[in-house]
Length: 365
Image (cartoon, rainbow, N blue to C red; front, side, top):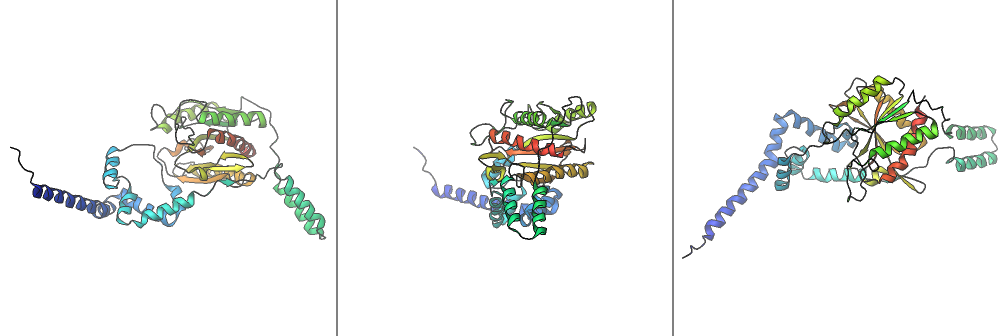
């Protein structure tokens, strides 16, 4: 004879479990964040950073981006409670729901684009020059006519004169810390691949080709994979590569660690010039290393040239604090450049190679 289920007892247990979960949620939402903020310096600092960033989004450029590391305890607790012990944002948002809405609004603002770029090059200025000439002719004032002519001459930017290629004295070094980074616009492919025809090696090869064939600038393109078998520690692996070339050559003017960005919407990372689409560029400068001032001078010089020749093509300079220093402590001539994001296509990144090469050629003294 089977025992009858004691539904009263079952409901009592379920009620206790429900109360326990509610109390756990309250504990995680209110008590734990307060304890972490007051007794843990890391969370205290991160909390202040988060609050400041909500008020001033520009400060997000000072956050350090650690290399990928999956914490399964964090993943499980986040799925069960909505709170990630290792993400101070989820702790604050659970206590102050409006924080989440504010962050979503900021992300929405950042997603404006894609941007239409009108190059300030000799070819692109032909129409502008004709307009300025007509205005000058119709203007009876000789002084204004001379001003219009001066504006045209200042805006005009002729392509750099082609140099005599000298392989013994390379002026530019291109390498990749995260060599396997690739482009995956539809989200159905891979964000990383060892196929050199599909990853950053292809983009670096295009930049080298443009620099040497069009501008006569001798360029070394190192194709070593530094992020296999795992991505963590890639900067430690690429460090000897840079040191090897610095020891062999003293002629470098610019050393580029070529990357592509991630978790950036396609609208934000895409530029349109005419009928072509391009992956926009962004610079990253470490602020902790001994060369950071001179690194910044170089990045600013290149960024300013982008802003002049291709207004809006660059997303600007991001300042970060990294334990690896992005190897920028090795030389004041190292600049980290992101070309597009994983949401751009390889074709868009390759299109960018021509623009990047033109700007770099302008920056070589």
